[in-house]
Image (cartoon, rainbow, N blue to C red):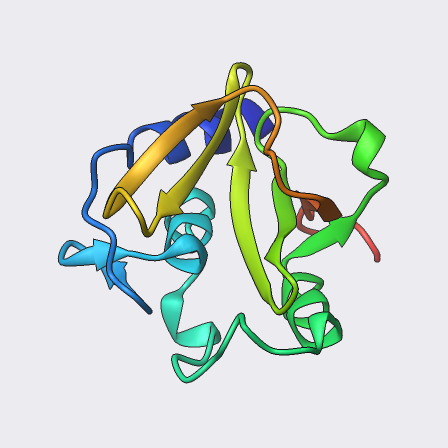
Length: 133
Protein backbone atom coordinates (compact mmCIF):
# COMPACT_ATOMS: atom_id res chain seq x y z
CA UNK A 1 0.00 0.00 0.00
CA UNK A 2 2.84 2.44 0.77
CA UNK A 3 4.18 1.99 -2.76
CA UNK A 4 0.81 3.24 -4.02
CA UNK A 5 1.33 6.51 -2.14
CA UNK A 6 4.83 6.92 -3.58
CA UNK A 7 3.44 6.39 -7.09
CA UNK A 8 0.64 8.88 -6.46
CA UNK A 9 3.25 11.41 -5.34
CA UNK A 10 5.33 10.73 -8.46
CA UNK A 11 2.26 11.36 -10.62
CA UNK A 12 2.27 14.94 -9.25
CA UNK A 13 5.76 15.72 -10.60
CA UNK A 14 5.57 18.73 -12.89
CA UNK A 15 2.56 20.26 -11.13
CA UNK A 16 2.97 23.99 -10.59
CA UNK A 17 4.10 25.17 -7.14
CA UNK A 18 1.73 27.53 -5.36
CA UNK A 19 1.92 28.60 -1.70
CA UNK A 20 -0.94 26.92 0.21
CA UNK A 21 -1.84 25.18 -3.05
CA UNK A 22 -4.25 22.29 -2.78
CA UNK A 23 -5.36 21.49 -6.32
CA UNK A 24 -5.02 21.82 -10.07
CA UNK A 25 -3.86 25.43 -9.85
CA UNK A 26 -0.79 24.35 -7.87
CA UNK A 27 0.51 22.55 -4.82
CA UNK A 28 2.77 23.29 -1.89
CA UNK A 29 4.47 20.58 0.18
CA UNK A 30 1.37 20.00 2.30
CA UNK A 31 -0.74 19.86 -0.87
CA UNK A 32 1.58 17.15 -2.24
CA UNK A 33 1.09 15.03 0.89
CA UNK A 34 -2.68 15.56 0.90
CA UNK A 35 -2.95 14.57 -2.78
CA UNK A 36 -0.61 11.56 -2.53
CA UNK A 37 -2.54 10.14 0.41
CA UNK A 38 -6.04 11.17 -0.65
CA UNK A 39 -6.56 13.26 2.49
CA UNK A 40 -9.39 15.79 2.38
CA UNK A 41 -7.81 19.22 2.07
CA UNK A 42 -10.48 20.70 4.33
CA UNK A 43 -8.92 18.83 7.27
CA UNK A 44 -5.86 21.11 7.15
CA UNK A 45 -6.19 24.80 7.81
CA UNK A 46 -4.93 27.08 5.05
CA UNK A 47 -3.55 29.83 7.26
CA UNK A 48 -0.66 27.71 8.47
CA UNK A 49 2.93 28.82 8.44
CA UNK A 50 5.69 26.26 8.18
CA UNK A 51 8.07 29.04 9.17
CA UNK A 52 7.00 28.79 12.78
CA UNK A 53 9.12 27.84 15.73
CA UNK A 54 6.67 25.13 16.74
CA UNK A 55 7.16 21.81 14.94
CA UNK A 56 4.90 20.30 17.62
CA UNK A 57 1.78 21.73 15.89
CA UNK A 58 2.76 20.20 12.55
CA UNK A 59 3.65 16.90 14.23
CA UNK A 60 0.24 16.88 15.91
CA UNK A 61 -1.51 17.51 12.58
CA UNK A 62 0.44 14.71 10.91
CA UNK A 63 -0.42 12.30 13.72
CA UNK A 64 -4.11 12.59 12.84
CA UNK A 65 -3.42 10.62 9.64
CA UNK A 66 0.00 9.02 10.17
CA UNK A 67 2.03 7.33 12.83
CA UNK A 68 5.51 8.52 13.71
CA UNK A 69 8.39 6.14 13.02
CA UNK A 70 12.17 6.22 13.40
CA UNK A 71 13.83 7.98 10.47
CA UNK A 72 15.99 4.87 9.87
CA UNK A 73 12.77 2.96 8.99
CA UNK A 74 11.78 5.30 6.12
CA UNK A 75 10.41 3.41 3.14
CA UNK A 76 8.78 4.43 -0.15
CA UNK A 77 5.41 6.02 0.57
CA UNK A 78 6.41 7.50 3.92
CA UNK A 79 6.25 11.23 4.71
CA UNK A 80 9.45 13.06 5.57
CA UNK A 81 9.51 16.20 7.74
CA UNK A 82 12.63 18.29 7.16
CA UNK A 83 14.09 21.52 8.45
CA UNK A 84 15.23 23.57 5.44
CA UNK A 85 16.37 26.55 7.50
CA UNK A 86 16.40 27.61 11.12
CA UNK A 87 12.68 28.42 11.14
CA UNK A 88 11.27 26.66 8.08
CA UNK A 89 10.00 23.10 7.77
CA UNK A 90 9.22 21.15 4.61
CA UNK A 91 7.43 17.88 3.73
CA UNK A 92 8.24 15.26 1.12
CA UNK A 93 7.09 11.77 0.17
CA UNK A 94 9.81 9.10 0.03
CA UNK A 95 10.10 7.12 -3.21
CA UNK A 96 12.37 4.23 -4.13
CA UNK A 97 14.77 6.65 -5.83
CA UNK A 98 14.45 9.78 -3.70
CA UNK A 99 11.59 11.98 -2.59
CA UNK A 100 8.79 14.03 -4.14
CA UNK A 101 8.23 17.56 -2.89
CA UNK A 102 7.01 20.99 -3.94
CA UNK A 103 10.12 22.97 -4.89
CA UNK A 104 9.49 26.69 -4.42
CA UNK A 105 12.69 27.66 -6.26
CA UNK A 106 11.83 25.62 -9.36
CA UNK A 107 8.15 26.56 -9.01
CA UNK A 108 6.95 22.96 -9.45
CA UNK A 109 6.66 19.56 -7.84
CA UNK A 110 9.83 17.53 -8.39
CA UNK A 111 11.38 14.20 -7.50
CA UNK A 112 14.82 14.74 -6.03
CA UNK A 113 17.14 11.71 -6.11
CA UNK A 114 18.59 10.28 -2.91
CA UNK A 115 17.98 11.61 0.56
CA UNK A 116 17.32 15.30 1.23
CA UNK A 117 20.20 17.63 1.96
CA UNK A 118 18.16 19.04 4.85
CA UNK A 119 18.01 17.46 8.30
CA UNK A 120 15.14 15.01 8.76
CA UNK A 121 13.28 15.80 11.96
CA UNK A 122 10.42 13.34 11.51
CA UNK A 123 9.17 10.35 9.58
CA UNK A 124 5.54 9.27 9.28
CA UNK A 125 3.70 6.28 7.86
CA UNK A 126 0.02 6.24 6.88
CA UNK A 127 -2.17 4.70 9.53
CA UNK A 128 -3.99 1.55 8.52
CA UNK A 129 -7.69 2.07 9.08
CA UNK A 130 -9.04 0.14 12.01
CA UNK A 131 -5.60 -0.19 13.65
CA UNK A 132 -5.03 1.61 16.95
CA UNK A 133 -2.53 4.37 17.55
